[in-house]
Image 1 (cartoon, helix red, strand yellow):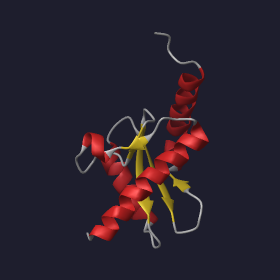
Image 2 (spheres, helix red, strand yellow; image 1 turned 90 degrees about the vertical axis):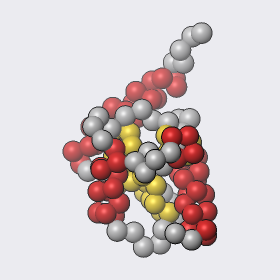
Image 3 (spheres, rainbow, N blue to C red; image 1 turned 45 degrees about the vertical axis):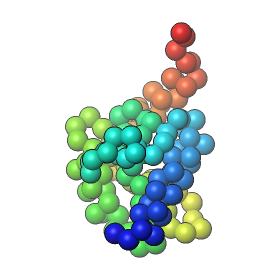
Length: 118
């Protein structure tokens, strides 16, 4: 993978984290810099969700979803957050993972609305 492609990937992961934060009120950030490893999520910050980010013009969505599923492991809803140039972000997941994803997003929203007292 060339340097330009790596840079685009990093920028895409940061953009995706910012988009999730804006839409969901989360505190997401780029994941690989904190956890490392091939199976670590591209974006972290939503417990119970494995986020795979693809910032490309031509995407094999089936392959991207399969990667997210393989990397997520047990107990996490695998999603692919993807977009092309000058287009909005899209989220793809298996229909069977939608209930887990909804629960994770709801739990995160409950946490951010009612922060733990110190």
